[in-house]
Image 1 (tube, rainbow, N blue to C red):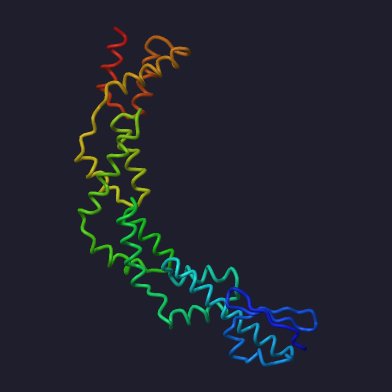
Image 2: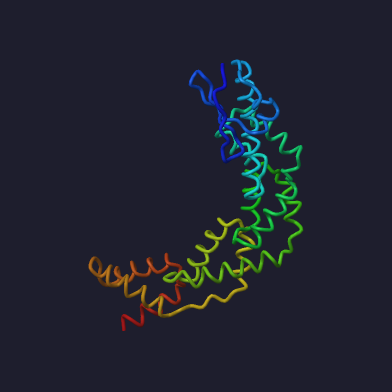
Length: 257
């Protein structure tokens, strides 16, 4: 096949037009390696060989760009490259990336944990789960997490629990505690740790909240019930909301009198 023309592209590649209406785009590394600018003809075998090498280079440069944005693990990189290249090229690329020192699993682990501890609300169990999905073993994650002082987790938890208390209105103390334990457990903290924080915090009982809930339920339930059955239904609704029985009886007595 005769080479009709070369055209320099912006992304360190050349476009080569052949006389069979074929256009191939290859990195300038290969232009130099195969001395293509001095050639006038190429056979199909040479074209196939160059395109194969070009795919390897493209995969490598794509990986470098991906890693430059932020640190990645081997699993992340493999998943990313597999969208564009076959497994053989992906594996070769990763081996070259590792050999060139662009993947540092230990540094990534430490950086990831530091970021999650300092820049997010997540707890240790969620961090372990996230890193295991990225290919780390639980033991090696725990080895680093164990270096983090307990008071750091405690301080984070106090802030999280405080915000939960302030943002959840309409719940009694018991129901509010249950909700907080559930919500914060999903962030990766142990139930025991959360309960210790809750036990150390005085959750103020707002009589206005209980009164408001009483009136709301009275208005709704009085359309269907009356007498003792009405107050029985109201009592159950307020107990479900987490209000203490003693406080419920007081508000019922106050409003019945």
